[in-house]
Length: 103
Image 1 (cartoon, one colour):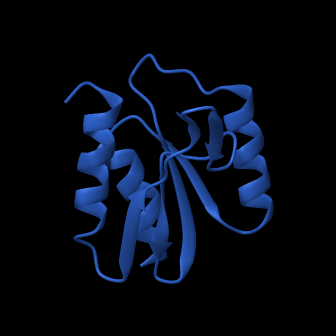
Image 2 (cartoon, rainbow, N blue to C red; image 1 turned 135 degrees about the vertical axis):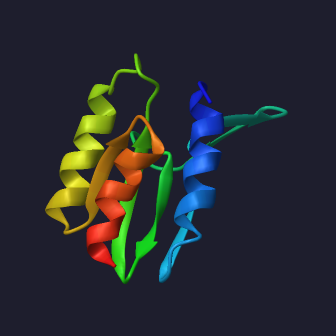
């Protein structure tokens, strides 16, 4: 499993098997419909968002060589300052290590 989208789907599926957990893909970007431009999501938001035992969790999925962009760092700082958990996951274990202590 080498691509970020495949890893993202795998992490979501595995986290949703845990008790008191609900995770989903958080899309962001820009779409063009005719002459309209629609922006959605929050700049820098994590790939996966969800709740583990009542705590908000944000997971940014990166490949082994993937780099965290400045906007992603800013999002991480803001979300953790608000009391949420933020993790960069390069594999399933990274995500599980962040979520299991919350259960």
